[in-house]
Length: 367
Image (cartoon, rainbow, N blue to C red; front, side):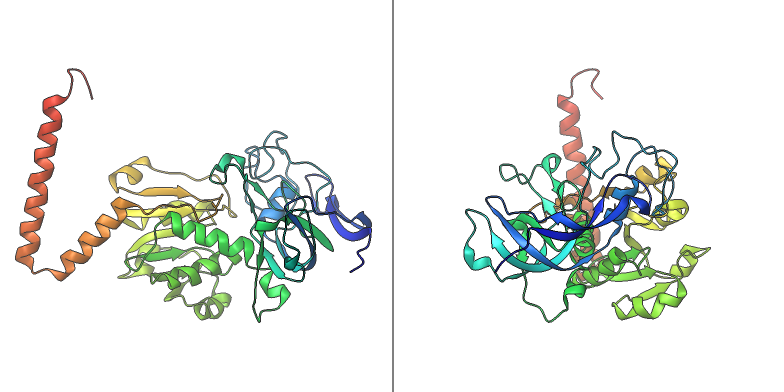
């Protein structure tokens, strides 16, 4: 295949409004470096990461909701997702679907012709589990808003699917983000998950992926979108922000909130979490600044997790405490009342014995 020397590309020239996006018809086509592949882009999605990077919303100087427009002040030290500047001009676009048309040294030429989508996390080959060394496709290196793009071979995921190129270009960011959140929160069949913003890209993925884990899913969405969210598999769909969320939930008890919305409704979401519940977050489209009563956090034994960088194997290890609680709860449901009481008494005596042993060896003045 003869490849052109130049290509069409949408190039971001700096942080700011839409005028920072410049369409070029003469942009140099990249060549794959050793270990990389050259992909002819067939479709590329647009997601909030692309928008927030262009606008500089990730900077802590910005405290408002995501708008896609310009902000009064954007810090030059932390305008991108990683808390550091990125280089311009930059071709954005993380969610690329395309065909491998050339390979660099060290890559099997048999990969040419493969249809691929992107694994967007650019991991250090020498330390793939080190999150501090991770980059993102379309941010720390050029992405898919062009006719051609390059990426490490391991980030080009071969796919065999009847879905169109445009449909496949909606998966990489939204679905990996959602799966990362559910993994960090250790969602399983014992959970009831509340999903704000369920009609969005990540919200819809959260609904589907939580259902695949066997969880019960309660979705929040604007009423014109209820039918679409129901079609994704939600067990119940409520208005986007009920005045009395606890009453709207009825008998449902929320063990996990999976949130990319934040904003002024945030404290209401936290207040409906059951004791021992988990809150997992990977966005704040309604605003990053929220209020938390720390008494709610510690008196209700809540766990908060942030989710951004995803390791090569999903990187979240099983949570022994959550697994033990789940197994104990399941065992309790299967036992007669008398055996539950005896088991609880035995656990209490064991805990008291351990506490006395610790007290016996605690140095004077230790706390």
